[in-house]
Image (cartoon, rainbow, N blue to C red):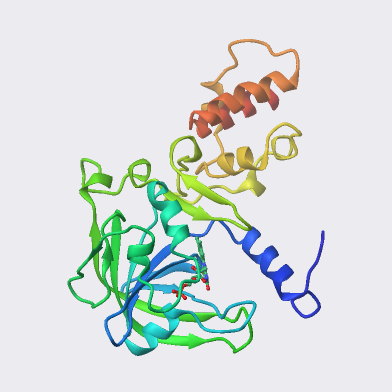
Length: 287
Ligand SMILES: Cc1cc2nc3c(=O)[nH]c(=O)nc-3n(C[C@H](O)[C@H](O)[C@H](O)COP(=O)(O)O)c2cc1C
């Protein structure tokens, strides 16, 4: 392993390792306003949700790595403690990136990047019409983490209202990940797109606890063919098959080599049949 300490690594390099590994990050396209009503719009991927009751989100316009100066978004919320966080879909990512350029304070990035500003209901900053989800926020607290270049400024917000475009909803009025087509920020110039083949579903551990990988038979646990993901699925089954269950699961053919048994088990795992996979493995390997 390459082991890196912030104490003896140049800040830009440390920044690289952090941002390339703590990823993908959601992007808050933050709309703020100054005390004179001048709008500002900028993307921030130091952003996440931290609880839903009360609903809390935090984003961080950090001090500029080069000059250590503060960003307009930070200056604005210090004066007018409100923001609208607009999510970023793939269809608007180029424009959102354009809005991140360091335009002077009197430049309105809504105009510069070609977005439509629409009034909010509970706060003064405008919403981005083109964004499928617009989150109106009151700023509860601003926490400065230092005064050097790269220092975080945590803008701690409580959500007042969320507007969701009907275009991204399914028949139950829930957000469809393929329709919202969000992008995430990686390190360097990299982004990722959360839709299509990039999405996958994963059965959450239920109320009945999974047996755990430690409870699997040694031979299965130490298989050279099953991956960590395969073992994770097997460890999520709620009980080891009983003798009678295994009897009901007699092998219907003889396998000449172990690899074929694992290959069959993987097929079951890939189609979500973890219990059957475990029964199959135990019936065929441990007989
Ligand atoms: C996708 C994306 C994510 C960004 N995330 C952050 C971030 O989390 N924190 C930050 O300080 N700057 C971030 N930036 C850079 C800011 O958007 C940029 O400094 C911008 O000029 C700040 O605007 P402002 O001075 O109007 O607030 C990001 C840029 C892009 C394109």
